[in-house]
Image 1: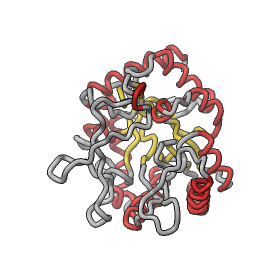
Image 2: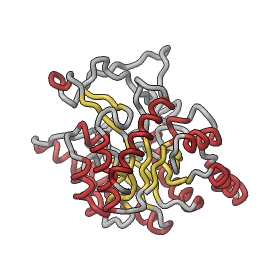
Image 3: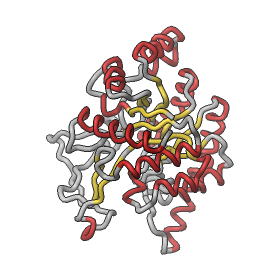
Image 4: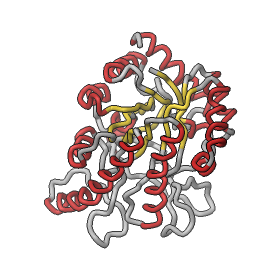
Length: 337
């Protein structure tokens, strides 16, 4: 088992510096972004695809730093109804399979995507609790789009010996263990499984350890990302929609779609008195939890790669990573893995 970091949090520095930071924190590997919602400052995509020399030079940076490359990340919405968004995110996802093969990688982290709820709709539709039969109609339409798309992706991945590791993320068609299993069963996939990121499971009231043991060998990769449920959840619940749209003159974080994509797509402002927050690993759940989490992953695959994902806005980048690295080091020692 290796503990590493997803380097999106280190996009403020170049790859060489990011690798040095990981090494200094005692981390063994990194996962780098290959497209989707965010850019690729740590991966010269076109050069690696086009040139063996560029690929070898790139891989040499990891060898020089003493840090492993242990996965690519291309989270996005490859099923988006907006053709410009869909083309960008789907193209990045397909390309990432070839990238992984070129780089000797076997794991690509991604999301299932989310299509529209009916022909002619203009936005993705997340059906949470389909008690109305019309919502089951919408789900049937969405699955009719997702299954052939993912069947073809699985074929490509199998040919490249790459596993597509889906983060079970709300606002996607696959957001919990049962929907992940449904996708695998309906596509007959052999190279589609789960990236076990516990953060979004926490706020859905899913026990990540139970989920690991339920999914077993479908868990192919993992993230270490924590969540704290706040007192405001007692009033607003975890499906908290009190987000604010940022004005064009405010600092907005784009979602990898670029100009000309029907108004573009940005991250909204998080509620001030939020129902839940992403926090540094250890600040939502203690070392005992993380020890059991690592133990369960080790039962599935002793060589599992577990990468810290840091989105705690209350802590600086390095400060948060230090908290996470320390928590996981103590958890791994306690778990004996």
